[in-house]
Image (tube, rainbow, N blue to C red; front, side):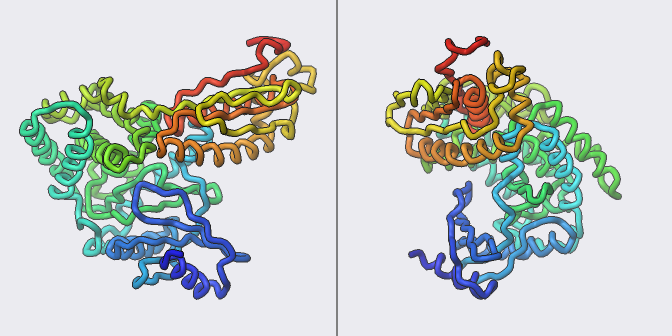
Length: 473
């Protein structure tokens, strides 16, 4: 057993006085940190292993800083510096991105985004002068050197691996121009660095903030750019504009904050943030072969195209413009980012029997929907299907389908991510109910929307009983 797991168990016993009864690894993220959920009767704690001691120190001290300012962040209970492990608050498994993937921009999701945006200026400015910038890692500020790292990350791990040619000296000249423009923006507040929907946990209906170990001194626009142009969140432009206006309204209530300067530089920071993200996707996806990260690239490129066409920063960067627009329209790049995974989703009737899986790997899932409330027993829905709004509203208003589908998402997401990482090309998911007309049809459509949103997998449910529906859509 890994020594860090033993160290975490010892730390858990030291803190709780109890032996660990369960230790479950959590899904890997884009970092090299490893997370576990450690449990015993009455206790659930997240254990973290990270052999980067400076990064651990930054997270622990920053967590204390934000907590003292009244913000909801994970608390670090105990730290074993020698073994590079620590215990922190278990905030559950639901992130803002997870809610968005499951519900779309529902009223609850919109409300949470607004609350996050209202809190962001406070996070960035709360006792900013008392923030310990000396321990920021790997850099004390988002300065010229930090920008050069991000731009070169994009150049070497994305642009050069994309198969699209460019004039390297001209691109470096544009990098210099963009950097000089961004350095005009005041940079005397806290930049959280990775402020995106995956790093906002929803606990008790409220947002909690995680993964701020990369915080440093920097300009205000960067974090809002990270949130609004988070690639796979794919927020509609109108909602982005609403949240931008809301942020500026809250910021304007604070003293000594220049909203005019913020507006002038905002889309420049959107641009460099997207370039940094593309570098990360290229490094994890092209270089390390983690294909799940490639799924974010089309969204990031679409965002770049919108920024360049509609919100271009007030600087001349012709080679970068040309390269990015080529990327956004490149068939070569599209083929590299296409996962090749086809998820077949179908609904059926148990009266006719479970359908054969024709997928390449001969496996997949069969889910039994017969324990869910049955709209087909009600006269008003008898001639309708799970694709009709009345039936969808009936099922969405009851708790059982949501609970059922949350379990489905958990299992199918795990398979999809594993299949993407291994280069598999097919997965079949089947939903059965009594007649194959209401519940199974509804669940197939819900899973299809979920996968389309979360993984950019184009799925169209096949309803095997459609020719026997009382009414065909």
